[in-house]
Picture 1 (cartoon, one colour):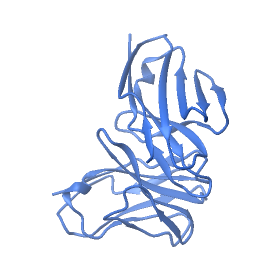
Picture 2 (tube, each protein chain N blue to C red):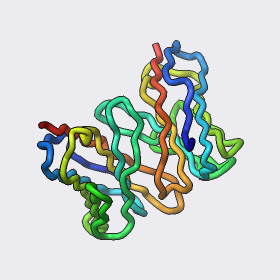
Picture 3 (cartoon, each protein chain N blue to C red):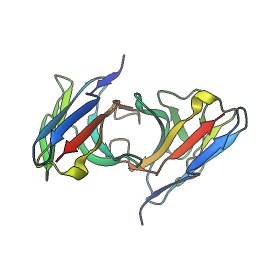
Length: 111
Length: 112
């Protein structure tokens, strides 16, 4: 079957670092997306990992291990505006447009 | 301005009354997709289209239809809506399935 798992909720303190994990099992795998979604808004793109390793983009980094079916999103120097849901999504195959999303992780940043 | 436009933003309808939610993008994207978002279930893909006249089922296609007659438009059709289709719907587009997707603002549908 196909499954994406991520924690439902996380809490962290302003200025800290937080890691949001995502594990996936899909029939075919091409890459993994991370999206951010603020309450009441549409998701916005954060990253797409195809190869193993860490990709850094400012305060946000994303890691992928294809052999372990595992990814994480790392947020540094947390700000209050980072309070949002973070969605992990697996792209099943380059020949199809199928995308499987996890249920999302709601991150609350506290002062 | 590059955008994905969905209409309507909010809709309340009755069971069995056919409706269409429109989606249009102005970025010349090949790939378009529809999702529904429900609490505790996350985003689930309904249908996607990799090009004009090419559509395919996502994970939850039952009760929905789509068409892709032109590149910019990808309407979602509910022929006979039922209460279990009450949800928040998002349309998205991207150059390909493995590139950054741009989402519309969402359509909140209530079927009574």
